[in-house]
Length: 129
Image (cartoon, rainbow, N blue to C red; front, side, top):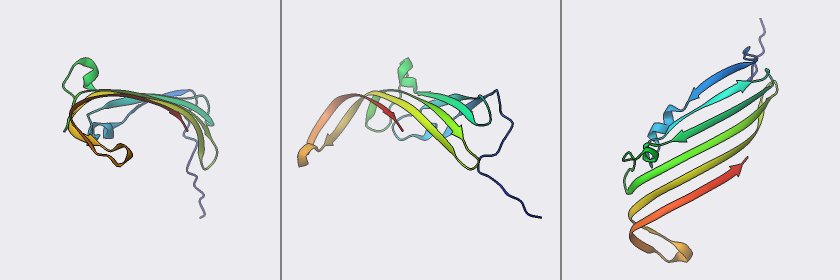
């Protein structure tokens, strides 16, 4: 008996909504993140997925680890997936926003090491793949 398998099989998910969680986000080195998302299958060839992750710092909870304090983060990713028989192709967009205080550290611009006791770090990243 000969069988052929494909990485992307028809799972009968047409017009289905899946709820997804990311348990590994609890173990991120900077802070604990709670992350989950939704994926809707329009057909067995096309789906759209959106996920968001937040930490307790957004709600006033102590959320830093190590040298970080007052750590606030949220991130989001949306993805359009087009499935073929063996693979899927995706177009995605993501946003990451971090705001925190870093204690007793240094950075090295232009080969010059600068030390500080306390720094406020606020940055955003927008991107697509």
